[in-house]
Length: 491
Image 1 (cartoon, rainbow, N blue to C red):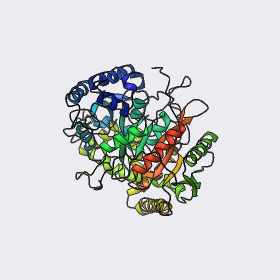
Image 2 (tube, helix red, strand yellow):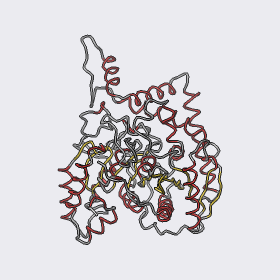
Image 3 (cartoon, rainbow, N blue to C red):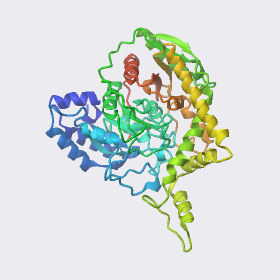
Image 4 (cartoon, one colour):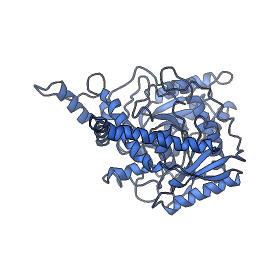
């Protein structure tokens, strides 16, 4: 096994025993990144920074070393990294190199992590297939025919890089499923923590009441290790929760006897593929075999989640993206003689934003406008409150976690849905958006392959702030499923 194929836990142990140096581990990943160019996962490589951090990690091995000492990671392009391009995959931020570090990357570096570079994503995290990026499509390392498949979105570059062993793990962000859906499409683990568990400071905003950063890893144990390093209160983020961060790795006892797992009847969607239904049934059996009690529950407002999400998220996006005006940083359009400031705004935003971002900004501006605010935005906020209440009632009735499919299908081909009705693409989020609307933690775990040989995942949804319990349930599911398949190397 090459060093870049190790999990965080395996690499940590090998580094601790002196069998491997952080420089060796980092060089193995940098070599894999060079070979992985066809995947278009890494868009800003930082080998000099990586090697400097690896040497520093080797120098402070032993007592006092951080939990991620010498572990090479990929960072989604949405996280601001000091002196390194942080473009959110948008032309409007071309050339932007922040003079500050996001809280998450600061915490990772304090824990001794090594940054290999920045990862591809959908522009401003708006997309489910990584086809809206100014860097071009990221490509799924899984391949079963002549097609290039999507790694999912918006954290598509993160998912592709982890699945292809270009890095040991990566950061992602999740606004409506952007960690969990790509994790399911690429056969890796992805967790969206409770809203407020991880600081949003220094992460380029999409929809501020929904965005949450989390880990994308090769195993549930790795997700626990990485989340422990990312989480914590941050006074710079007004939505950051001032509550203790438990030892997530220590919570992986593998014992869920007597725990109640809810199965929401509303997630049995009309037209759901038989393979997804069968996978879900298998997941229920595996958790029952581990001693959990499986109970049917109702989340009656689920059917309103997608329309509510696609009112609230664009509304917040139109507000957040108003700052990109061609004045302070990033792209500014070339102006003609006689052009005024309004012309500059219009030309800059027309050139800088891609079609999907323009679509969502226009939708968001429309639903916030004077004549439609109550009809759309306020109504969507009320629906959101009802969706949260559904979950609150399920948990109050004693449910410890909820099991659902992660995605309505396996990965589809790049370009296959690009020209379709955008609503068809938005349906990829049908199982995941409720978790963001309710602010809950959710995790995608790879459980099997479909008939074509592509990975499929199941989602577990946890109680607020109970990432420890959620990870333990996921650990049991992962162990029972025994998913060890990797993509065949074609790149």
